[in-house]
Length: 130
Image (cartoon, rainbow, N blue to C red):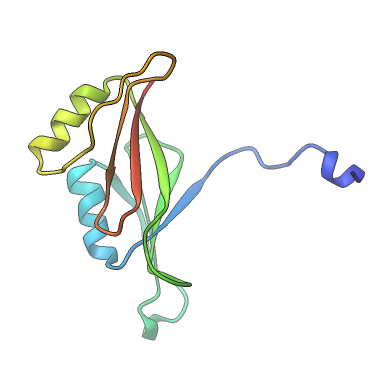
């Protein structure tokens, strides 16, 4: 290995993860009205004639953001993120009351309790107890 591959990274934060979505406005609605995120950025990006747009959403108080992008190469969906909560069971019940269909709450020895759900494009959101 070269010295370059063994040197310490200058990266110190996970700033933004990206999901590809087929309908940015519908994704904004899901992440804000169902998951309780807030819109952090919604600006024209790239060629405005092509509908270019950069949208970021995040849970209130989070420094990391989730970008909701139209597909650049291929189909939307298939990505995954993990969100943290002190009470996954209560969050699962809250989401059910809003019409979201989450998976079963998994609570196995040696792992935190968690469950998953998907958005309309098949991106996975894991809700994990901390």
